[in-house]
Length: 88
Image (tube, rainbow, N blue to C red; front, side):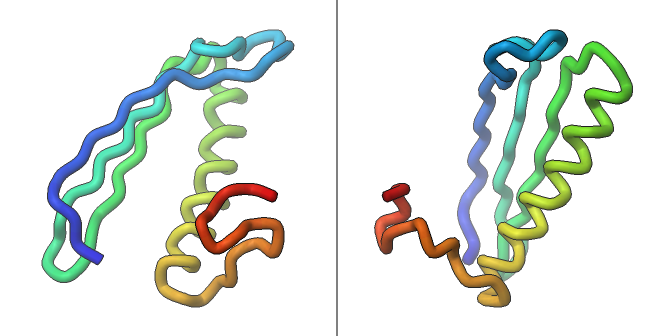
């Protein structure tokens, strides 16, 4: 599904996390048309340690892999999502 270019930026963090409080890191997502498809680029920055960066990189790999499989029809949506995408 091709889209024209879009760019999103938001801050990220966790309540009650000792090193990553809310708003402590920045997530940048861009969507760029590429022929008949779309390239999603993600950059997550501002981590206080290499261990925090690696942990989040591993998490993003899982979630982006799931998103890719879902878009390609290889992965069914979670049962707790309605057709509109909102959580029940």
